[in-house]
Length: 227
Ligand code: DC
Image 1 (cartoon, rainbow, N blue to C red):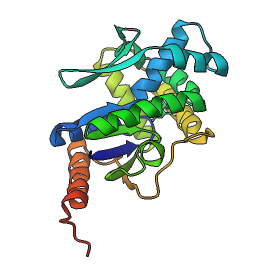
Image 2: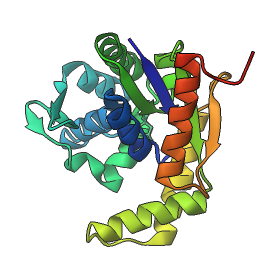
Image 3: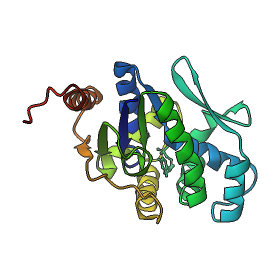
């Protein structure tokens, strides 16, 4: 099966780009952050705090987390309820970043991600896809953008959805999550040695998608410039 791994910090454009790539290549887009978010929501609903490792891991063992595809879009189900919208709050973002540091949580979700990659051609995005989940991916991309650009993107997204937004608060939350995700002991956010780094601060979605498609074609069709 074919695999494209897309890693990077919050707001670098991973999901938008990954969705576009999957559309172009007719691959399945797998949003791994959504899985960590669904578990975080399960913990919040059970009143489990992110620092209660034992309880978080127990919730990870017991929660029925399913991924289903409806009209080509990934939907997350928690105990048979579609929670795709409920996992997008700031509270869930923070809890997902905090609970994803536990090795047992990661083992479970990584196993699920690898299983999907055995069944489908995938574009998978997250923090540890190129380093841990799909170490032999056909192409690994590490997307970055300055914290200001990422915060501005989030801010606009909220306004477009008619939600209230505070730019400074968003910027602070993104900076905290960057620190948290890249400083944990297990599978921290890090560029794989063989990943191509792309700074999207000054690039549009079409440009980034095109660049990655070209890289992918060069790799897989062997029509690159290299000898
Ligand atoms: O990509 P996202 O913002 O939806 O991810 C939410 C959190 O989940 C992120 O802050 C860290 C965690 N995560 C992770 O640890 N590993 C992944 N592969 C994806 C997300």
